[in-house]
Every structure is written in C-alpha cells, then in structure tokens.
Length: 495
View 1 (cartoon, rainbow, N blue to C red):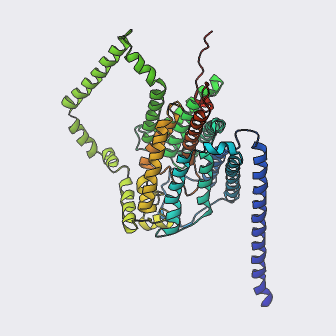
View 2: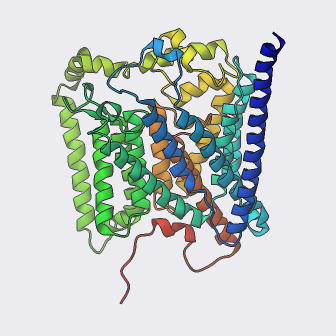
View 3: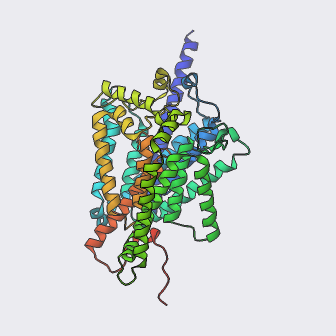
C-alpha cells in the first residue's frame, strides 16, 4: 500500500521539477535572447517589434484551423462547458508570448540605453496608455466584483509601451510587416474555401445586403473582424504600397474582394470614412486653394453649384419622397426589426448595464462574458459587450470608463494634430478604431489578438510623429522629418 501511495507523490514531484526546470530555462533563454537582440540593434534605429504582427496573426490562424470550427452551425450553450484547445496550440502559445515579450522588452531597454533619445519620449501617449491599462485591466482585475489576475494581462502593457517608443524607421517596418501579414492572412482564408468551406464561409448567411451570397469569415474570429482587418490592410497599402505595380494591384484586388465578401456594413462604412479622411488631409489644402483662386474661378464656381444642387436634391427628397412612410414600412419588416435591435446587441447591452448597476465602481471584473457567464445568461455568442463603452462600463465600472474617455481624448487630439505629418494615416486609424468601437471592443487589453493590430499601428504612428516633431523643434533642419517617408508619394523631378 505504501508503494502505491508513494507513486503518485513521486510523479507529482517529477512533473513539478520538469515544469520548474522548463520555466528556468525559458527565462534564461529569454534573457539571452533579449541581450542578444539589444546587442544586435544597438547600432541601428529599429529592432524586431514589427515581427509582432506576424506572430499575432499566426496565433489567430492556428486557433481557427486547429479548432475545426464550423461557422454554419450556431454555437450552443452546452458547448461552452468544454473548452477545447489543440496540443499544438498549447505548445505554440507560450512560444509566441515569449517572442512578443522579448522583442518588446528589447525595444524598451534599447530606448533607455540610448540616453540622447530619452528626451524625445512621447510622454502624453505613454501616460494615456498606462492610465488606460490601469483603469481597464489592473483595477477590475484586483478590485472588481470577480477579481482575476493572469500573466496574459501583462503582454499588451509591455507591447504597448514598446509601441509608444517607436521611431520613424520602426514605423516604416511596422507598416510593411502589417501589410504583408494581413495580405497573407487574407490569402490563406481564401485558399481554404475549396477544402474547408464550412470553416471559412457562412454559406447559409441571409442577413446581408446581398441575398444568397455567402459571407466570408476567413481565418478571423468573425466575418466582421475579417472586414475590419481587410480595411486595415488596405490602409497599410495606402501608407506603404508595394514597389511592383502588378503586386500592388493584386494586393488591392484581394483586399477589396475580402472586404466585399465579408459583408460587414460597419467595415464598408468605416473604409469609406477612413479613405475620406486620407483624401481630405492629402488633397484638402490644394482643393481649397483651387476653390478660392481669383485668377481661375471656374473650379470654385462649379464646386459651389454642385454643392447647391446636392442640397436642393436632398430637400426635394425629404419633402416629396415620403421618407417617413418608407422608414415605417422598413422597420415593420423583418430586416428593419433586426436593425432596430442592432442584430440582437440591445439584449447584450441590457445585460452589461445590469452588471454595471450591481458593481458601479470597479465593475464585474475581467471574467465577464467568459464561458460560465454566457451559459448563465443563455447567450453563447456574447463573447463581449459588442460596444467598447458598454463593455468597459460592465467590466471595469466608472473607473474604467474614466480611463477610456481620457485615453480616447488623447488619441483623438494627437491623431488630428499629426494628421498632416502622417498624410492622414493617423486620423484614418483613429476613425477605424472609433467605428469598430460602436459594435465591437477593439481596445481590450486582457491578452493579444488580431484586434491589437490596429491599436498598435495607431500608437506607433502617433509616437513616431510626436518624436520627430520634438526632434525638429530641438534641432531644426531644412529637410522633411524621416517619419513621413513611409507616407510620402514620389513627386516628379523639376528636370
């Protein structure tokens, strides 16, 4: 009996010893890797932070492919009790996490080792990001009604701090890497259509504007997520196009095709608004100069007449078009009722509101919308609050909402301030995040996922522009800042 009872104890000791040995070796390897990375990048202006886009999207691909999901079958409450994770994903997750921590910490250490660049640190972005993390992650994790702590909460903090310290050369590499990674991500989803149709294509989708047309989810968590990722890929193409014309055209065709097939109305509207922001910033000054040109007033007169005609047409439509009757008929239909309820999101928002009222200061905690909570409310598909404000209010309470508002204002002010320096990209990325926040939660920092791509690109764009602005004030130079190199279109030479 004693031998049989000692055997499980020995097995546990062996397992614990192996785990501790692995943890020590992993920490030692990370330290050596970070030291080596610092040494390799000490003589150049960029590190390996742009690799994070490949790593994040790789984990997204593995999670979908290894899960064997079927987007044509709705998720049931009974499936929430058994979380399934493939062994390969369990092996890849810590390796990718270690890689992300290593490349991010290398950038932070390298920045502080270069004392001449410490004064150029964009403090407003860094402080805003840290306040946002404290209010929406640390506070509910420690003081929420259901406190929970996890090492995964540290990854976005470290990655975000590294992104806030980005310089111009790093920004160029980041847009190239994000462009390439998103293009490969979209192509992989398209290539799986003939082989894994039910995994990437909703063949029974009937709620879109295109009746009978399947909805493409690709390798994203949802078709809406794929639409927004396709939009960001197109913005990266605008910021950093391929040098070869045929490759650039092919990338645009793939991006627009995926955006169309995802059938996300939010992504369509967001892409139009983001494109309008870039066009307005890049062509706005020249447009107003032409409108107000007294030497050649024809363009200004034509623009004014076109505006007056558009206003007159809108007034005639409102007066004689029976808009009220048509709207009433639409909302009486099945499609109108679905739109009025925001495709069922009103029920999720009601649950989030109730949870906030129960825990108004620090919220429910990070575990809101986990499998057990969704099973308790009978909403298996409610993986988050489907609105950034409502989700933060329910998870983190008033403290989290205040941090969210402060952070959003910082991003808005800086996006507008550096819109000209980034040729409209900073403003477009902010609009993309704002539009996404209406129906999704792109600013969650409880781990790293595909939503982090847009967030980090915006932080790096603002940080690079702020750093170059400070550098220009400290050391005035007649040439243009280096950070605009990725956004600069080639001008014909004077000769």
